[in-house]
Length: 521
Image (cartoon, rainbow, N blue to C red; front, side, top):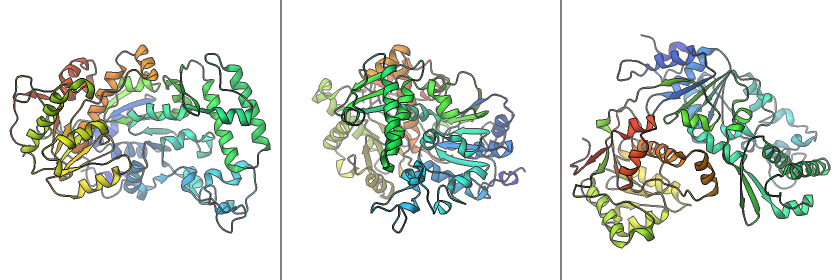
């Protein structure tokens, strides 16, 4: 029998995972390797072994591969799995202390510094550069140049203006690519401080509309400051400012202008015009990976044509039912609107519905997704089971999650931020409540501009968010759990998303039932 280790993967991967139809991870790897398309869409859900698939595909290509991840957590996980076979990890320069800026270093000024503000970046000679953990002999950059398999996060890759210093890559793997649009948007948003412009450049904020002349003038003046300034941190700020103004001049991009206390922000409506320059960078083969990747997501990040590889889901729907109560049942669903539009009676009924399910679920741990801290507060104050509830504010999320994962049932986590990136495997949570549909405000100027171009943008994002939320309590092939939806808007929304094939495939498994007895055995 062919095994992953025969192809050089770590011994912990003993066999290729077999899917319900009888196909295996190896069959999926073959499809990627044999594809002649530049872009390959790899849709792979939880538990399908996607990291093994794309790592082995990169190995079999026998060319240099770069894996991008959205978070340091996923970066650390991949490094733990594949460092033994040569996966080389590169983080941002702020993760590497600058030896010249440490005590006894030649540029030490009493404040510790990292390679992100190191003097060598701005033309100063440094006698310890060869010993630098980032630039030095045997440092992070040298390791990356010589490695066949490299990983870093999206922001590190996009913020590296001189990306050729890594040596060319032949394959790019974008993991959790559904987050790429948001990452690109955040990276490309320009923040302008009115006082800084006035004091440093003797300029006002750019005019609305045509600001080509303003951009050229501001860049010219900033370059003069850059040449005459000897402060390393200031040079870094000036360099970043020039890069941001250059983005403002990208042809064909519409920008949304918002006033702030300090000045303005300018955000691109769409980021597809930046994707090649900042993300793909001419790399000949690109694998776009996510459980929720689809053609619309890819169009948002500049991909119009691609091959499709779909990994079979390994979770039978009977092991992870999605349940919504029918209007004719004893728990007629409440449409959760703004608090001021619901009224006391409807809010109480909404929480009572949750309590009725909790009545029969005290033997397992429950996670309640509330969307906002206001709704979190309402549930905690009104529920008959508040004594079992764990909750948090914006500063105590990490501690609350740690407590919930370690305590025994009965235990109920009530959180507005438990969504993508938060996993509860096995007994850490067997039950997930979608207390409120994750709608967002469409009156925001950026959202309004996107809806003008794509009327289904809001529904698409909500649907994708739900898919990600549904998987929080189902993290392994032998896991099981339940999802309950307590917002009556679900039935209305479900009809609107039939045009999204991937969403419909999952949503059609939802049971609109009159009553439900007992948890999944």
